[in-house]
Each structure stands twice: as C-alpha cells, then as structure tokens.
Image 1 (cartoon, rainbow, N blue to C red):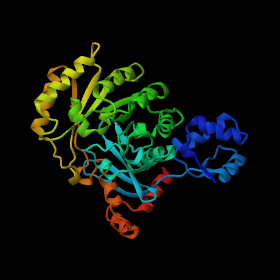
Image 2: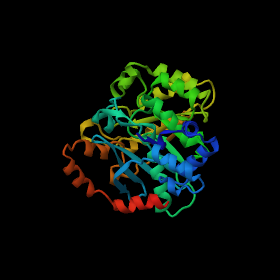
Image 3: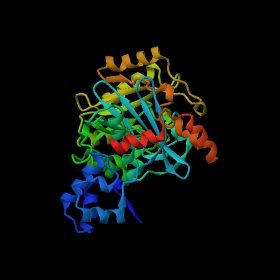
Image 4: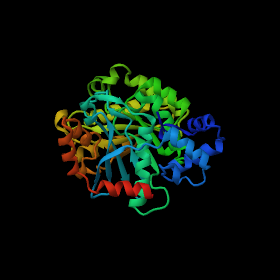
Length: 382
C-alpha cells in the first residue's frame, strides 16, 4: 500500500526518508519539489538521486484531489469542488484582493455543529478530511493559479480554515496541515496570515495555542447565551463567558494581538441595536486594556432550509457604527462570488442531494468553465 506524501509535514517526511536510509536534506528536497514546485511525478524531481526516486515509486505517491468543477466569478473569485470519495465533495474558494490572495479551505466533509445559518451544517457530517486532503486544496490552487494568472511567484498569501467543517474537531489532521503551510520549505506562510476559524471548541483552542498558534477567528454570532444557544448549538456546552475566557488565554500565544469575532448578520434575529450594545458590554467586560478583538460582520448568504434572511445593508451599517463608536475595530465582509454560489456548502450541497452518479456527473459538466484536461495540464506545467 502506497502512502500519500501530502499527508506529511516536513518532520513526517523526514521520518519516511530515514526509513529508506536517506538523510534529512533529501526530505527537504522532496518537500520543496512537492509544495514549492507542485511536482507529483518523482521523475520530475531531477536533483533527487535516481536510487531514491526508484524507492519512492514503490512506496509513495503525491495524490491530489479530483477536481469535479471550477467556477470563476465575474469579480475574480474562483471556487473549486473536490471529490473526496464515497459521494462526498468539499469546496475551496480563492478570493483575490489588491494586496493579498486568500484561499478558504475545508477541513471536513460536512459538519456536525448544526449552526442554523450554515448551509454545510444542514447537510450533516460525513467524515474528517485527512491531512493530505486539506493540504491538497492548497497544493492544487497555488499551482493552478500560477499558471492561470501567468505568475512565477507565490499567489496565495493568506489561508483561512473557514470552509466546510469545524477545523478543531479534526485537530490531529489539521495541525500537520498547518505546519506544511507555515514551513519555509513548503508554502512559507506567516502565522499571522493563516487563520483557523472555530465555533468555540475550547479544549482544542487551548491545545492549538500550545501546538501551533496561528491567527484565530471565533464564530460568535450572538451577544447572549439564549440567542447563541439557538444559533450555535455548541454554546450549550461552552457558554459565551467560557469562550471569551479561552480567547483571552489564546491571546498570550497568538501571532496577532487580537481575536477576530465573526458575526453573521441575520435579519431581525441578531442585528438590532440592542444586540450591538450587548456586544460592546461583552468586549469591555473581558478587556484588560487596549484592543483585544475585532468584529467581522458577515452578510448572511440565504439558503431555503435555513428560514433566515440577510440583514438589510442599512441595518448592517447601523450595527457596525455602534461598535465602531465604542472603539471596536469593525469590518463588513464584502459579498464575493454570488454568481457562483461561493458561500460555503452551496455547491457541495447540490452534489450531496443527487444520489445517482450518472446524474451527478452530467449535471456537474454544465458547471465546468474550463475543460478538465486543461486544468490537469495547468497544474502539471506550473
């Protein structure tokens, strides 16, 4: 049985090479070929000894995910749907900005958290992704984008674990993937530019602070326990008070001096002035002086099963003003890729609802904006 080298961080790959009687520097070379150059064939790794390449052919491979479809928005956002087997699919989204390129990555097929406003949560939970399946989303996107945008240098500067799933419920597979992203021999991303989003799995937040502290975003979405219990069921296990205490503990190790609170704006549910004032009181209660958090207000992406609506723009702006007038750094997330259903879980939900493989494949072909042969060629040549 062959192993997938995308499953290993550099230390894991070093162990693989040592079992083959090879020195650490060979693992570094191999790691660079895979992640910096996007190579999947050992024959292309020209500075590796031929004897090592032959050993690797019998033991290992670089196994990418199959791209089921690609959608390109009029605003430059690109969304990929990846097949992870057994009828499951996961999504990754590239969001270009003037000063950065952000990739949103999935950590699970489905999600068990059951948040009312989340399309993925309504699909249920299937399984955790392996480290290699998490890394493969970045591996594919980075090397495809270099070819697509005709750039030799790195395209993706930021990674956010905000796709499908609760990252901290897949902790053992997540942390090696983060280490690949951060490694200078891999993608060389700054800890400040890799963000893990969580609905508040407190024990794993504390572990992440010790094992691999990166930027942290917390899905808050409500200013009091009664409302958050309804919107984010995990709150029944870990209250807002416990969550904010954990955030303060994390700050002692975080690469940034603030925690980002994500707040999905739901019309008539959590977007009233009283809710904003409650948030101000919370922030002040847990502040030890200075700025320790910022809010990212997210216009809700409606889907039929939710029974929820997006807050009106004026309501969002009024809500933001209350927070900003209180000295809280507040941003309103731009809605991106609406024409390609770029909200997390929307496209995968279409696939999951189709049970016949032939029907699924036929439908997916209508979404593909670039032939698969061209996609595969672009990655191979990048």
